[in-house]
Image (cartoon, rainbow, N blue to C red; front, side, top):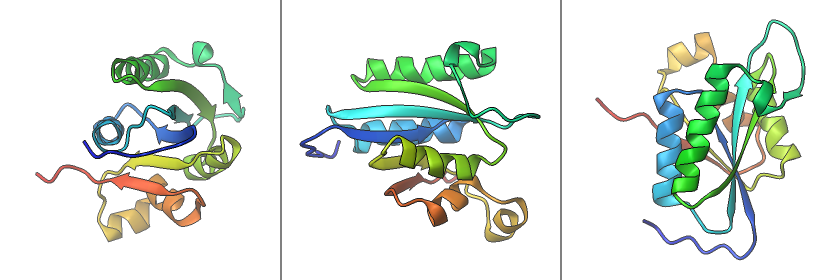
Length: 146
């Protein structure tokens, strides 16, 4: 593991969605960047049929709650201080950029599906949006090559 020297609390944002990509991003963070002064914030963006800004984890749907609880358990097992947040937004990329600013995040760690340029252009990409709009340093963890 790489030694990272941090003198003050560092808020790290890690978007999760229950996919292998977000789990891989978390594991990469643990293996390469984790520091005892980090405060890790798992963020799940729920794309709704209606719009409400933030909900308590306890009121999120059971699958979202299960995903967030699983990530928190993994973080705590790794000795990481963590929090979980579920936000409702129709535009996940914009929501993550806004949340990074609101939480004063010092770093964002995200997984990516590794879409090719044509698919990313046609379908859009949350990671791509965050990459081009966030002011916070961003680590993009690529997919495992098959």
